[in-house]
Every structure is written in structure tokens, then in C-alpha cells.
Length: 100
Image 1 (cartoon, helix red, strand yellow):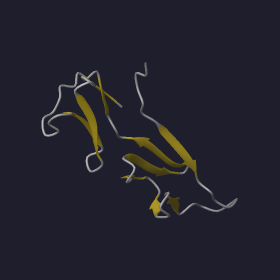
Image 2 (cartoon, helix red, strand yellow; image 1 turned 120 degrees about the horizontal axis):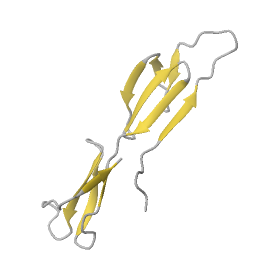
Image 3 (spheres, helix red, strand yellow; image 1 turned 30 degrees about the vertical axis):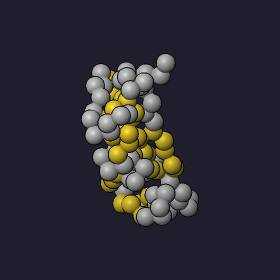
Image 4 (cartoon, rainbow, N blue to C red; image 1 turned 180 degrees about the horizontal axis):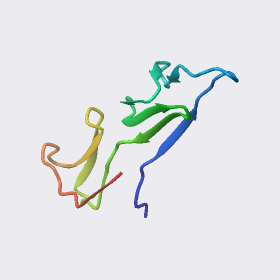
């Protein structure tokens, strides 16, 4: 059983030897200033440093809910999962634990 499914990754800066980096280019090609932080559309919080871009997942996943009667539904606007009843998706299910 997995106790945590969070992740982080680093994309190193690509600069010519002897030059100073202007910032970091994110996966969409946007140049981000050094020492800045942003949330991307993959529900990750990212920051730009002299080491490169570090991004970590913001998504919390529900566990321990009644999977026979409920489904986990992802909301990309809030970067969260909620558990709802299969027969009535407007009604939430009890979730004892969220991991991230």
C-alpha cells in the first residue's frame, strides 16, 4: 500500500559556460524570473532558481473511502479530488484520509 503519491522533479538550467541565466523557461516556453514561484496547469507548484525549475505536485488523493459506493472525482480548478456517491454525484462521501 502506498502511503504517499506526491512527487517533485527538477529541470536543470541550460546556460552557456560563463553566462548568467536570465531565468527559467517552463514547459510551455514561458521565461520565468529567478527566485519566482508559480502554479502550472498540471497542478504543480514550481519555482525558478539558479539550479533550475523545481516542481512539486499539489494534488491530494482521498483514500479509505467506500470505493464500492463512491468515486473520486478530480477538480482541475482547485487541484483536488473529492469522493462522491456513485448513485448521487452531488452527494459527498466520507473520506477519512487524504494523502499528497
